[in-house]
Length: 295
Image 1: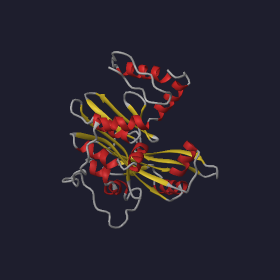
Image 2: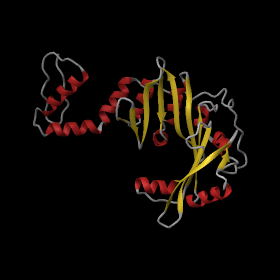
Image 3: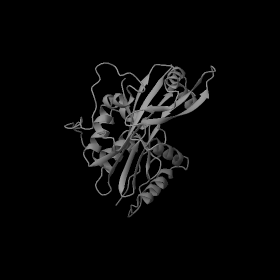
């Protein structure tokens, strides 16, 4: 696997934006709603909320991984591409089968003065280190961390990070990640095809670029169009969510403990929550059967 988008943040006009379409796609992917601005998407999050006169949309790396695994990542970009937007942050990463401690040792030896030039000027280096079980020092090598630079980077021991966060061990792996801000000139094409941007920032300061990598410039994306997408009807999205809702299954199981009328009681609470007024009475149904409404 080459470079991949690991975080995408965009803003839209507050009155003209694809909030509904993005929300529907997230629900299609199996996302759950945490609050009025946050979706849980796989092991990551997507935030969608108004702020400072714009609609802000931010997808974490884990959320983008989930969308890729569902085959929905390009559709996500396609929805964004259909509306006027501005990319405020784009993270592009590349994993290598290298021991993180070795990678950090090489970078620390290469930059003993603590400054790395990723572009116009040298940026300060900061380190977050710890001791692994094997006694070696490892962690994260930051370039331009917490500065206002247009692009920054970090290199970290991905194997150790997974072990620390999830208790899951694996093969040696080091992640090189670059971040560009809104005035850098990145576009959605850089999220869809991130190799050029990654090597433009990372090489030669952090890595030697492989042969054949095309050059990057802010205007290289001109003429790029997202793949056409099929429109999902709201009824289709809702029907799938209801039929596959594990939370609704759990609520029905609890209602069944109340006896034959449990699901009727649950249906009334759901209608109240939806603000739907039903005239007449609900028809009682056998346990574990859908509840219908009359009149």
